[in-house]
Amino acid sequence: MKPRSSAPTPMGQVRIIGGKWRNTKLPVPMSPGLRPSSDRVRETLFNWLMPKLGGARVLDLFAGSGALGLEAMSRGAAQATLVERDGALCRQLRESVAKLGAQDQVQVAQADALQWLAQPATGQADIVFVDPPFAAGLWEGVLAGLGPHLAADAWLYLESPGDNVPTVPAPWLLHREGGTREVRFALYRRAAATLSPDHNSVAAV
Image 1 (tube, rainbow, N blue to C red):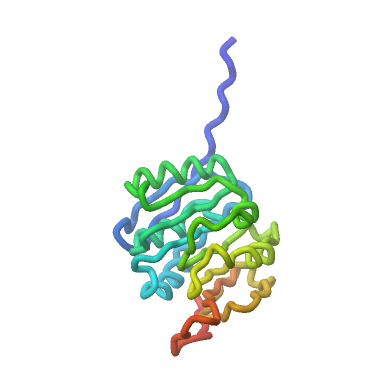
Image 2: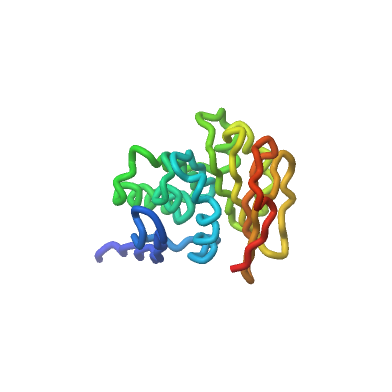
């Protein structure tokens, strides 16, 4: 009798929507709780971030599909660290990074985000993306551990359910926010940084 072969992992895909890798489609293993940011949300977010992306160091703490970290790289960021706990997602992230020829600029770390943050910082990011599985309720722990890993004038992107907005402590100040029927998304900056004239504006998508 032939050994039973394991069923292939169901695959989805995400599309990079702007920059040098525009319209590149990347395969993503389907995983419970995986919820890539929609094209509309990403387009709004990266319009906000565009003046800050050139040469930026990026940290994507719940990388999942890689949609946020790799979009940032496509649009001009210099370095990215993608932190993801799921092994299958990490393997696919590494394959996607290789496909894009970005191995020298993008590090994929297979780790629990809270445990990764508890380790000594090896660098300081200019932009951090925090979009955890909503059911896990990880925002408080993540926000408490970010400090050593970020530059003094860093930007924080936070995605959460529209009916359960996490409390964001000092020194973060709301810069812009928006929402869909499913999610609330917001961009913050550290209070020590100089705020732009459009601080605290709201977008709907």
